[in-house]
Image (cartoon, rainbow, N blue to C red; front, side, top):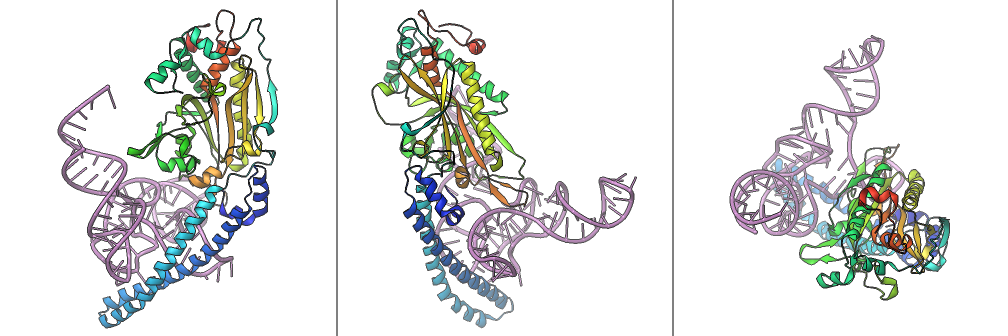
Length: 422
RNA sequence: GGAGAAAUGGCAGAGUGGUCGAAUGCACUGGUCUUGAAAACCAGCGUACCGCAAGGUACCGGGGGUUCGAAUCCCUCUUUCUCCGCCA
């Protein structure tokens, strides 16, 4: 959520910024500013009436104590009109509040100045490309064939017990999952992130805190009986741990990580794009989350990018980094870098990580603040990134490290897997 | 799942209808004293919103109600604790 002060004071730059998303905010912002003015006026009236009522009530109290019953009862009469006024004004203020909140929820984050205008993924910029694409002297297999050949993943069995998009990993496939999770967590810890194991279901307030709600409830699995949501990413529980927190000073840099399964309903396209591990309803991911002073946000983002680059390099995967254009940047993010690994077998780039800064968009909703040098509370910046998402990494490892007879496991994983080849 | 108790400021803990945004203690901040520190003493010390300001409004787990007036009474939800049951 954007801050109302920002909309008031920097109306034009907000509108201009949102144009990079091809989002025309002018009418929403105009009505917001108008409602905000009404709201402040009504609120002023309401508080004046409340103040009078409070004053009279105090007087009545004193009159009763002095035994002046008649005068007290007379004073009570005065409150009747004021009470009605108060009730009416309260209703108007609340109604305006509600309208403003729903308007605010419609506004996406303003893109960072580095973000280019654009409509969709075709307008994304490639900012870096590293490593060599694998060369094969045979026809490389897609990962689903490899997985089948070596009994690593059983998609049909998953369909039987749950449904499409819920694969079962087994044997070396299951061990590879576990190895990657351990490797990613250990690397994150080395980089200073504290490991957490959060709940895999969250309440409604948490969904609002990180921006999944309202609007995107369709992407989450919902447990109606208990009013809980399955997490679509560890970002939700990890960031919401800091919901409503006021940090005592500006000497903070919170770095947290956690492994969780992620659940996405994502009823979407079918066919080649979603074949195998490319798109699942349940997958594993290690997430890194940071809560930073606004001045440190940019540096933190760069550190996170370096961290993800390090992971991919250690796994021997060639990759490219994209800076998403306005239209492809998520609703809550100010800037997002996607990491993609090229799959020769599928002849496509697979998104394996997404690293974003949210500036104050999440912390406004979360009410996550710190005391600045002037002893005033100020909103923190939040950031997060996948480090990394497993399925596509597994797909990329199987496809890009395949040999005629099997698959070579990157050396950094040997101590976790206990085997060097599949 | 059943029965009971409780939820107050950073912590502890008063307050059961009327100047209560809330006593007191601890912690914390500033000052006096001291060569320095401790102790002692003095002062300050919640959050948010509106307002140029003076000031005002709201908040005693959440929501609703009674009342001129609610931390205090009523309803409801949530959470915690104790006991019982069930269980990895």
